[in-house]
Structure formats: C-alpha cells, structure tokens
Image 1 (cartoon, helix red, strand yellow):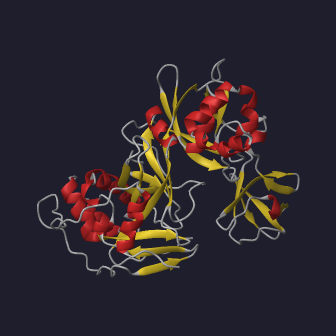
Image 2 (cartoon, rainbow, N blue to C red; image 1 turned 30 degrees about the vertical axis):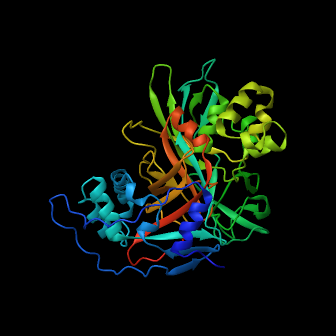
Image 3 (cartoon, rainbow, N blue to C red; image 1 turned 135 degrees about the horizontal axis):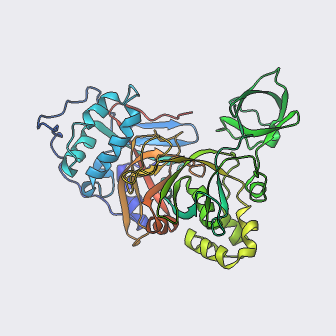
Length: 438
C-alpha cells in the first residue's frame, strides 16, 4: 500500500474540490497560562514527521505537521478547547492525559492561546483505511419531540426504559456458533457458566468481533436474543418494561432512537432529557436504503427530512419501513440541563459543532480530532477541530465520523443532509503513538 506524503495529501485534498487548504504560517508563541506565565514544555519529544503506524483493520496513521491540515490557521480554537475541557472530566483519570488536562485548564479561552496549546502539546496523525484517505462524515443531533409523561389521545407511542426481562451477559470469546450455558445473576444480568440453567444458541445472536455482551431474555430453559423493533412495535413489550413517557409522533420517536438521546417537550412546556440506557444489540439497518430498493424514494433523496415526509404521507407503510431496522434503544430520564448538551459515550456533555462520534477502536475517546469535509448548510468546506466524545453503532472504521450539530429542528436539518466524503486527523499528545483499542 502506498500512502500519501504531506505533499500528496495536499494534492489529494485539492482534487476533491471540497476542502480549503491551509496557508503556511508562523506558529504562535507558546501558550500563556491564565496568570500570564508560559506553560511548561512537554518532556516527551515529538515523533518524526512521516512516521507511520499500522494497526488492526488495515488502518494506518502518518505523523503530520499542523500546516498540512486544511484551514488550520483559521479555526475557532477557543470552542475546541472548551470542548476539550469537557473531555478532561474523564481523560484526567488516565495517566497518559492527566498532566495535559491540568495544563489545558490553565490556558485562556481565546483562539490564539488555544491554538498555541494544541500546537505545543499535540501531534496530528492522518488516518486512512484500506489505502483510502477519504472516509464518510455524517451528522447527528439531539432531537426535541412533543409528548407527555402520561398517555393521551395524542401522545400514545411509548418511550421505554430497560425492560424488566432484559438480560445482558458479558461475552468475549468470539465464538459465533455452538451453544453456551448461562447463569442468571439478577438485576438484568447473567454470566456464561458451564453449570448455568439456560442454554444459548450462539448462531441466533448478532455476534461480531466487537460484541462484548449477549443481549437477550430467558424463555423456558433457553436464553434467546431480545425482541426486534418489529416485534416491539407489534406489542412484545406490553407490561414488560417501564414507560418513561409517550411521544406524539412515531416517526419522531424512531429518529430519537437513531440519534440515541433527545428531549421530550410536554404540553405545558416542561422538558425531560432522554438518555441512552441500553439497546437490544441488533445491528442498525438503514431504512433509507430499504426505501430506495423498494422504489419508495430515489437513493439520492433518502436524507432524514425526505424520509420523514414520505412516512407521514404514507402511514400504511409505517410499520413495514420502520420494522426493517431491528435495532431498538432503551432510555433513561435525566434532568434537563439547558446549558449543556446531551451526554455522549465518554460520559461528558457534547458541544454543538465541537463534538463528534467515532469508532473508539481506532480513535481515542476524548481526544482532539480534525475533520475536513463539506458543510451541508452551503456546500463549502467544513474544517473543524472537534473532540471524539461519542460512539454510534453505525460509526465503524478509522475514517468514519458523525458530527454533532446540537439541539433542535434546525440542527436536525443540517444533520439529516450531511453525508459527505471527509478526511480525518487524530491529535495525540507528543510522543504518544496511535494504537488499536479493544
């Protein structure tokens, strides 16, 4: 495999016609602390530009210079640093990041100081997979949907918490066929145990190399996969799960599930934040592609707004189309903190325009990530230093990013139209090498 040098990177980016290339400039002086004194020098030396690291999944990283990143000199760095502060709520417990997070806390929230901080303490690594520089960048958002905490004639579509009979069993052997025995341990959990009372046929479960738990239920003396979306929509959970609230619109409820979190707005204006609690573990399946294959919508017009409009115009097809995605998410209620975004997989609030979901096996959760793609608002370049603070079942691979747009209908419009080629650089502390993370 031949991967581009920094010069070929520039050529590759220009060839797409999507991205603005950064002009070379003199790096700013070392960042000052909040009291005006220079921040400490990093003791670990930088790796050499061009150093290459190959990891599992045919993902390759090449050490670059900041001036190789498109539009680097014109970034809103203060927003990126504020988002990194959120990351540090979790990263600071990691010995490799503790000192760096302490330094970040002393940097003023200005673009100049934040830029100097990132340039002084980080090395950018280009990410490619299977020899391909370009990956896919999509968008997501925090939806707001109308509903009620109790069932009404309008709000009649239940939003479920984790079902009473839902069981999660830690699983890491990688076997996808044969049988194992399961022992119930209570509290929606179980363990693989040769002396367990229940038998599980592994071929029935959606096991992949990333499976860390079998999600299912006990039926007689068997442990079987949990219900699919089609089964749940047909009433399989009646009386078997707490109902947190009721939504007015089943289409909006479906997209709440796709996004993984959101806010319920009641008729009196009360707001409840709904956060991801668990899922049935069936893989996400695109209903847009199904609709295109059936001739319901052209493939070029299967963005979220178009899908919503078609489903509302064709209610007789609702169960058929939504049932094609077997994945189903269960929620938990949280107080609605209007000043912060929803919590991502890292466990910290997401920041509109400065957070993203990634594949945590290839990108370190919490770390800075530079993304170069197309802005769905105007078709121009969108080059941004964001923080990798979330994951998603459809976000797999080293060059795969889901850009967080924020809360509400406008954010949803931008997110729904975003699916563009993109390039990715992961920023790691100087001296730290990329690695595959199990």
